[in-house]
Image 1 (cartoon, one colour):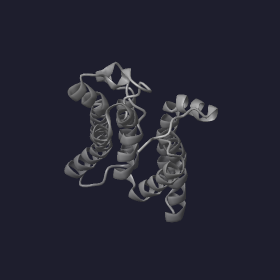
Image 2: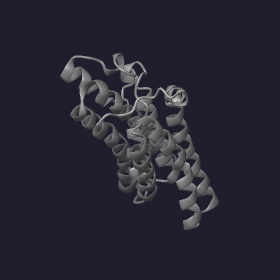
Image 3: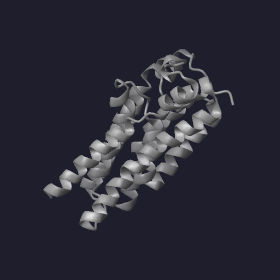
Image 4: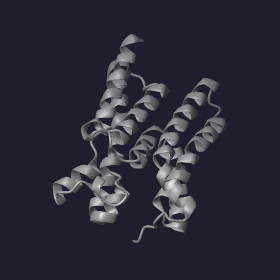
Length: 214
């Protein structure tokens, strides 16, 4: 048990450090000699990259940040299979997902000023629960098609994540402990995302949040 906890701790540190590698900052500096955090919304994320540098850099940014979430969970799963021949525990995936998200939001490599965590959270969710991921992505897509506002789509999707998680637990008849763990981590991740969008929420309420022009 102690060795398992050590593996989880190592994976959490790895996930945080991996999450701290911000592709929006790397791409804007490497290809344009600029820091995306000094432009537009000052956010180191895909949407701000899109608005200031275009579609291709934004797509690369999304893929990189999305992959961070997936890789964080996969590494944990591989280590548990390698050492214990079992799947990683539910709590491990939850903790590692949160660490990857916190690394992206508060990156140690960039003075703790990063992005809002939507892409990396999506990667975590895909690696942890494909069914809930598809449901959340569907909501995101529907809201975006209607509104053309990324922040609104992200906020609504974040709210639905714990809801879909709870519904799936009830449908599958998960144990109370497993259900509580899954919903708790879903609530934590969604709360962080919503908190990071607090400025967007103010603009949405005032009608000043910009739409994406494709």
